[in-house]
Image 1 (cartoon, rainbow, N blue to C red):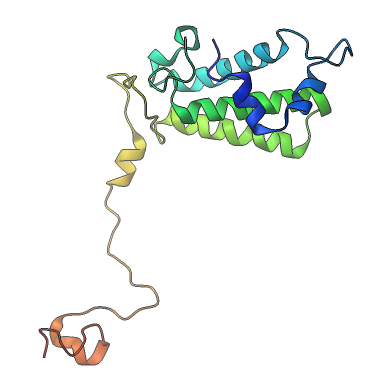
Image 2 (image 1 turned 90 degrees about the horizontal axis):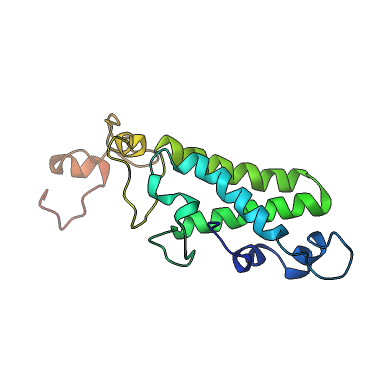
Length: 171
């Protein structure tokens, strides 16, 4: 099953766009199975990235896309955006805005694969996976810089830098 449903894809753009691009026989109605195939394709592509750290998020294991323990909400939204890009590619071809939509989702997916973005889910990360993002967050950053304001100094320096007011312990 896909990480999203047709209603999620519809939220990305108006339904008539979906119907027009899914009507290969020109009957005026969406042809059966096309949107499902595109959602499955988007899910499979994102699975290629998230499986690095989240083996339990295999789309084959998804039975309810609305259950955030099975599919994190952000993964559901990103899958819907990617599927919407595929829908638009069918309808009007690959234009720069559509390509950008696709590229943005895949750039996000790469950050998940690299460990820079953690997915909130009932599924746990693989035991041997690491999070470079967390390591980066706690890496030494050097001295604090005070751009555009006076150096706070110490309480004894209150008169020269204006950091402490007249009620402070410096007086």
